[in-house]
Length: 162
View 1 (cartoon, rainbow, N blue to C red):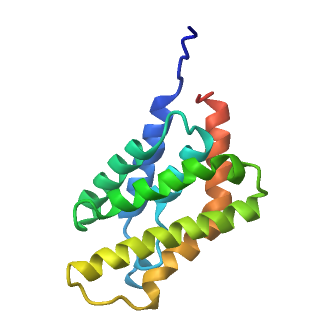
View 2: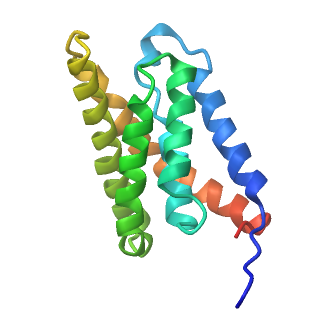
């Protein structure tokens, strides 16, 4: 039996906390609706990079804290993040070999799925329908994906996160 030692769990935790900080960072009112879903981008990266360590359970916890942080219905982001983590786990071997621009398109689909689930949940609880600006964080997040990917990959390599 081989014992596998994991290193750098604190790096994963710190990156998630930084994602939370970027989520609550004050922005001008016009830019508030354009903020990408940093926590989702970070979860997608870690599920792609370390599927044996970061999975559906971690994504659900991150989503639950995200709900508490931004004041949405408790469990909305948790459900969305868990579903996206599951799909990412199922497809991680394919997505990892894509060039960065094709990865960004895959991330766009995953971020749009998160937005669709949040839109559906808001409809179920009787919140008014959102306008087109509701969907822009997915597009902005797709534009940020190459930066997030390269930055977190360098951090993962520097601190030998396994």
